[in-house]
Length: 139
Image (cartoon, rainbow, N blue to C red; front, side, top):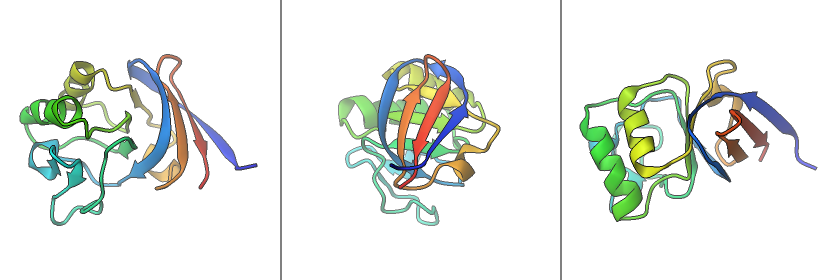
């Protein structure tokens, strides 16, 4: 049986989903940093460059960029169907919240412990945003 860790978070957008984690310690710029037609991170110096966010539990500390973030995330998720299953952030940022609300993407804020340190790439993650907890099953 795989090791399980439970993290406590705070609901931003409700929902219950599970899937493979895609984790970065860097902020994500959805407005120009992710190609909405493919779901692939295209920001050159980003540690996730070349990786797809499609159907992943996307774990990142915060969003970066402008209010265009929400519009691009909407296209990524709804028009092209390449968005993540859920978002786990360390810091609450309005532009990411608006994007999650508009696309009905479950979102949880988790500050202690730091989710970017507690969840690894490839871990299986179950997000219960309604109850505010995250179950992590180590890869």
